[in-house]
Amino acid sequence: MHSDQNREIYEYENKSIIAKKGISLLNHGDVVLITGGSTNLELAKLLPQKMNLTFFTPSLPMAVELLNNSSMLSEVHLIGGKLSKGSQLATGGNSINTLAEITADICFLGTGYMDLDKGITEIDWEIAQMKKAMVNASRKIVSLSISKKLDTINRYKICDLTQVDTLVTELDPSDKSLEKYQKAGLKLL
Image (cartoon, rainbow, N blue to C red; front, side, top):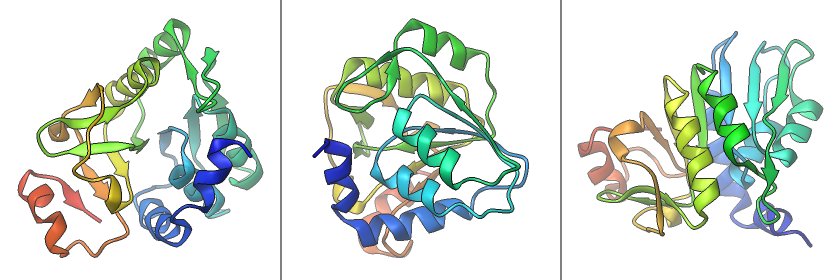
């Protein structure tokens, strides 16, 4: 079984809660950048059918999911590049150059690792560069993350938490474990 399929099952209920909260941030007509990952895939599965949205994604599984589940009014653009075998995410100069030409209203950033001091990090260099370009191409950054990924770090930095507008977890925003993220300026959902 492919690694993304395994992750879809892991923490399913929590990821569904996160996805529903994330959808509440969308507005009719938004241009949306969205990475891959099981939480973002869940968001794509739950999209309302009446929203007119324009999606850009470097994720092959995400593009397919968006085609299957978004409104007939929505557009889906697959950002091309070298596909990472593990994540099925397009990387490289072509995809980063494409992102430099986009100004998105919102970016749903699949988050593997988040730490108050180190920001959002990633295990793979090329994926980190792609996500960094997505952050730079967006007006609003939303981190969708199960709480188990908070207070974790990895090798390559994507962005500081000061660049993130909203942190969406399965927890209630008043949960004590999120207090330090709220004090750091993140809106919690």
